Image (tube, rainbow over all chains, first blue to last red; front, top):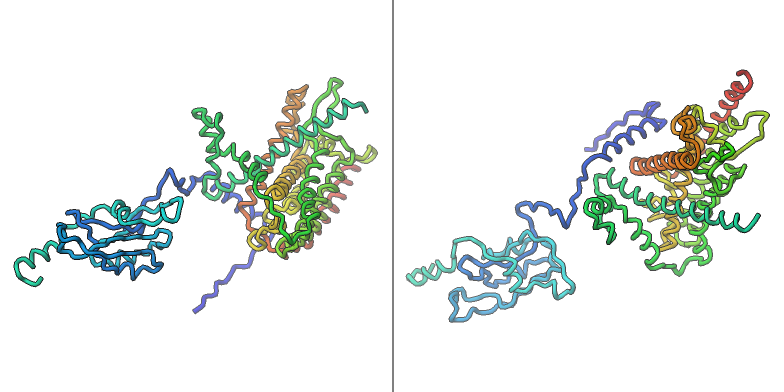
Length: 178
Length: 368
């Protein structure tokens, strides 16, 4: 339903503009002495709210295992196709051989990324997280592609103590399927 | 006329023009700063000079104030690529910015900016050319600058500049009428019957040692001020530019130095307009109504001259501030509203004002 807002007819003083102009001038003159509401960016940084979606990164668990199992769900869900994963087997002699698979290469093209956070949402291993860093720049296109090393460097360690794969391994050792 | 006299005049002219140019460049800075303050921003605050910028307290303070900003602004206009689009009429395209700036600088010639008491006790204006038809000369020359805008709009051969040019010509021509009529009461008052007639701006300013004309001819002052806004193409009357509708109006196709000339021309017009308004209505170099510098006893010699120039420039800068203040307060009029205001309100009002003052001045001159 549309609402019709009735406008008051202007009275004589309003019709001759000048008093109203003076009122407007008074308003702006008061603003002239107000404090600036802007942020002087490189020196002052905005406070990042919780749940902010900055640069996507890969994380390791507290034992140093890379959480990503290269299921490639993020690669498929990524709307701008910024993620490229090359899955690979984890070598037999590794401490985490029971996890079976890990990413051999993991590239996120930050020139394509739209910071939608779908990769984080879709990840079953909680391996990819969007961080607070929002200011990324580089001198070439290739510089703007974050490879696996860079992603772990940015991501660091996720302090969660589920150790899902470890528990799986222990359960398998006891003989139960799960 | 000996050669020294001519050289001296050249030197004076160079000084005055460079002062006007300096005022223009700092007016641009003032505009940016005032707009940012009114809008709750900081404004230009980064540009610094190597030596002055590193003085402990003063340097950062000046940098913060943006005092060095006009230098890179000017350099940018000089050194950016100058694009002349293929579809323009080259001759007029290049001529237009010159035509819009030259009248503004020419009018400076007749604008007195102070007064000096000579050894003989005579009060002489500080002016490049003390012409008796000063005011007439000023209006004649300054109205030429509309050609610059019209030519720019037309020679750009592109629709937005064209619309801007049309609007500018219509607007400036219609407001010139009301402007001219609104100052006639002043001329009637200054030219007492039986005396030699004058349109000299100096005499008009000197006639305001009692009431300033803004005080007892307020309607004239308001009409003149509104027309001044329209003539200088300032918001709320910047029909020629009107960025929201016409990209940037008549100078859409201009870049680099040619655009810079338009830009400086606009501010030069503002400076001259403020000077003229100060002279006509705000008492020129009289510090207060009914108070002159001579009454205060500081009027003699070079100190008095410097003081008069300072007072005059102070008033002018105040008026420039007012120009900018209004710009960042009022929205732009619609084109038809501008025309309506000019023809249906200001022109009849100025004529009524003229007739009223004819009777008032007749009464004052004859019966008192």
